[in-house]
Length: 208
Image 1 (tube, helix red, strand yellow):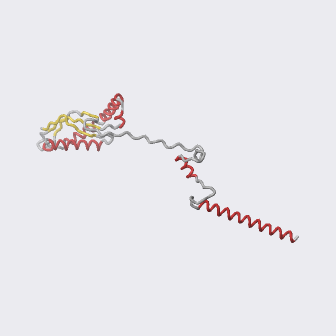
Image 2 (cartoon, helix red, strand yellow; image 1 turned 90 degrees about the vertical axis):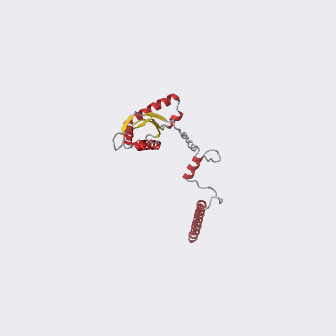
C-alpha cells in the first residue's frame, strides 16, 4: 500500500511539473508573440480591431483577394472640386441703378448741393451663376436684383448720409470723387455683408 502511495505521489509531481512547464512555455510564447518586434519570426501575427478596420478602409486584402473582413469597405468618394471663382473685371458684375439724388452739402453758406446718379456693381452671391444657362442666369439676376431692391432704402440712407457730410471743396475735384467712390463701397459692404459692391459708377455728378 505504501508503495502505491509513493508511486501516485511521484506521478502527481511529474504531472504537476509537466503542467507548470507547459504553462510557462505557453506564457513565454505569448509574451514573445505580443512584445517581440514584428520583424522577428513568429508562428502567427496578432490582429487588432483597429488594424482590421484600417486594412479594410485602405483596401488591403489577404491571400484570397478579399479584405480581412471578407467584404471590406468601399473607398471614400472623391470630393467634388469647387467651381473656380473667376476674377471679374469692371462691367462684368450685376449692375443696379440708383435713383438720382439732389443733396445739400455741408457748406457754411448752406447753398451748395450735389446732384448725382449712382450705379452700383455687385458681385453675384451665387457662384453657380458663372456656369448657368442663359435662362437660369436671367432668372437668378431677377431674383438677386429683387433682394437688393428690398434693401434699397438702407442703401439710399447710407449714400445720402455720406454725401450730406461732404463739402463743395471735397467733391469738386477728381480726387474727391474717387475718395467718395471708395467710401460708398466700404460703407455699403460693412452694413450689408450679405452683398458685395465691387465698383461704384457716377453716371451723373454735378456739384454747385
